[in-house]
Length: 257
Image (cartoon, rainbow, N blue to C red; front, side, top):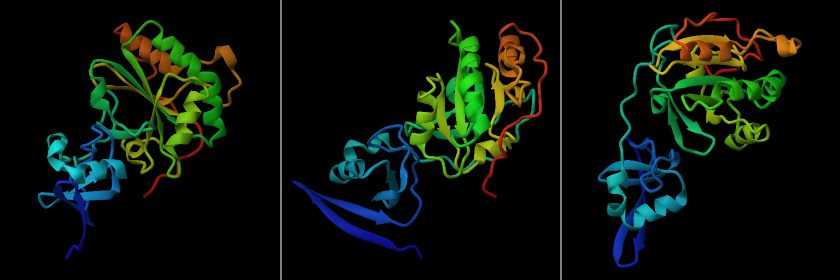
């Protein structure tokens, strides 16, 4: 039997109960700070259901007057069966916490070309790519074109959002940092190394997967072929992507089993 620990917090003029529940919250995002992911250990109970919050301050606001925020409460959908990534087929949906604490979903970018690039703040190869390859890639594919979005995914189980955000901002990369510390998205896309890249077209189909370029040693300089940039160009020009796949390089990921 689940144990319900109850502590009463009486607000001025109204009795509000701050309930601590050992069950999982029914919501993914905070009803007070809309859109921000909850922390699983900050809970109250509303109508018999455990409700999660992103911080203690939001929990306190809810406890004082749940009716003010109840309309913002969205219960999480049942877990979906995950698909495997297959070239030419719809890219598997994912939801990840950004380094800013907000949720990013693949579905947010309908009609746009999406580049997924795996990064690691401790991998020397990922650092070299971020320093010398990624800036040129982003400049090339995004030059005057808002149809392309770049997402940097970190699947390091011990990674911190602050470190990933700094990794990107220090290099002035126009990319959204996403945290995949449970490795679920990496597994979904068959990613096993830190510099793996994926390109998804505006219709949501997976068009390229593999190495960002043909220069794993980083010695070809300007002669290196950037597979990701070429894939984006082919999609924009309604051409066949070639190659569609290449061997990824970088440090092997240590994903949870």
